View (cartoon, helix red, strand yellow):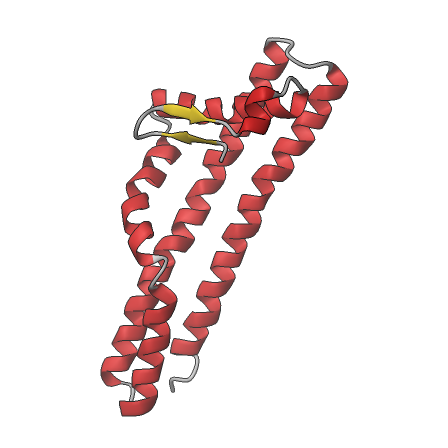
Length: 166
């Protein structure tokens, strides 16, 4: 529930983050404000990610089904039309993978902006800063794991479509 909404330019915080006065809540709030600053300064990676949102919101939920359907059609009727349906599904899936990788610099940058602000404004003690730094870096790494998972899924389905061809 903690996120920056670029459509209405709001930082939305969960009750737990909003109502607490601790280093973790300050770090999360500062990270989300980092996204607002990215938006205000036209951060290039955020702009690219924002342009992909409409495409990915449509294609990501159906890409696996399109690939699977294409493979099923290919198995039932030969590789002609079914093959091209499966390739179309891979193209759709690649959009989600691209989105995942474009998200990485966006998230790391927001965390770096948050940490710089926490340090510059002395919002937290040095020990709390180190904990905030650790928490934000690990949170950003969850996006790295998601991107790797998306790439692995794309490679798996790519091998299913292209791997059996002579």
